Amino acid sequence: MTELSSLKLIKSPVGKISIGATQSGVAQIEILPPGSVRIEFSDSAKAHRFALDAADQLSEFFEGSRKGFSVPLDIAGTAFQLAVWTQIAKLDFGEQKTYAELALAVGNPKAVRAVGGAVGANPVPLLVGCHRILGSERRITGYSGGEGLVTKRWLLDFEQIEFKE
Image (cartoon, rainbow, N blue to C red; front, side):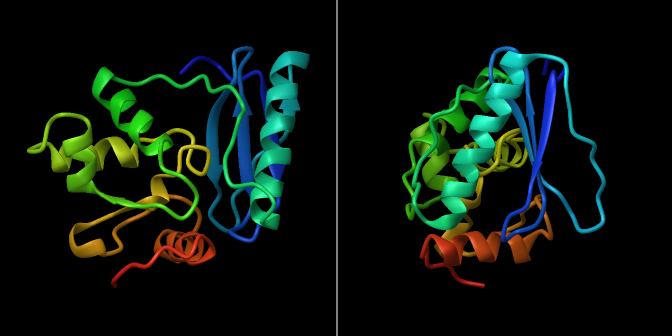
């Protein structure tokens, strides 16, 4: 990832969210754990605009008036990670897939564990909805944002996605 040129913070039902942008797009979304501290900054008007647009769209998402996102992304990863993130980005609000289904979608059905690693490395959760990926039999699995599984459960419930504990 290139160096961030802007950082914007917003409040949401799942806690504070940090939005980092470069001159090319949004590069980082973090659902911050309670007590985390980030300081807003902006070294670039263009990057600041990307961060503000993402903040507006995320606010609309949590208000229930937005189901998808249209901000440019500036994310880097391996070819495999990018393929996984592209498949996740195709999921609409309220849709889900399992890790196995995602592995099949990227053309490597035996790469379920590698898919899990790519899902966990997603630099822009929410914009690329990795919370929509479930384990076998639609079981809820780990989540690194905010308060972990508490945050993932909230997001799944918000989108009315059924899952098993």
